[in-house]
Length: 127
Ligand code: THU
Image 1 (cartoon, rainbow, N blue to C red):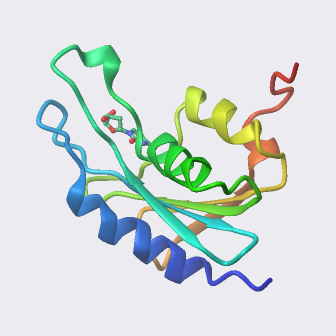
Image 2: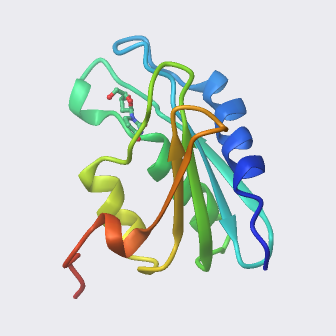
């Protein structure tokens, strides 16, 4: 399937408006494309107990898995507040579903960076 990286990035950026981030004020959106062509979005959801926050990437993955999807081909992450790069936990969570998922990030849609999930987490853990 041909992936429109820019379009996926724009969906991530658009969903960032729903981020719940009263503590960091750093809005993040993620858009996860599956092999079926469906796109699941997610946002960061923060909490008074800071450590309970969930990142946009994991929100999108949870939404997709909750709908019965596990075959991921691309994940875009975007923020209007800066260059959002997936944290270590999100890299591990994504790696669970494969090492060749395209991860799209960048400061804006004209400067996209595309890397494989396996390259973002060398020697990722697998049971
Ligand atoms: N955050 C994400 O949701 N994804 C990223 O790729 C980077 C960081 C969130 C976590 C927290 O709610 C806020 O951004 C600041 O770290």
